[in-house]
Length: 51
Image (cartoon, rainbow, N blue to C red; front, top):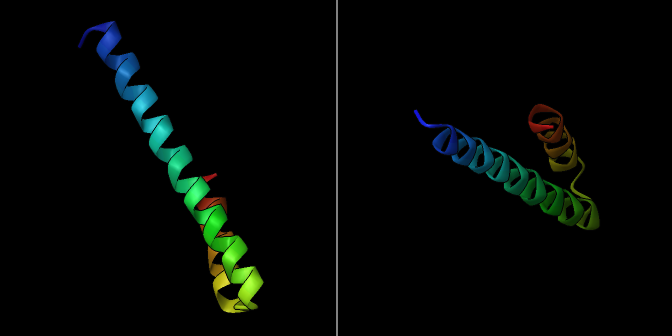
């Protein structure tokens, strides 16, 4: 694979990871606002997994 292609794939993977993390963080804020402790714990675990 060419170097440019490898860089594009790497950048795409990083962007995807960042999008997932932002989505989880938003869901965490909503869960905290609603007082859903079970979901808060689950989302905090997901953040650790993807972080």
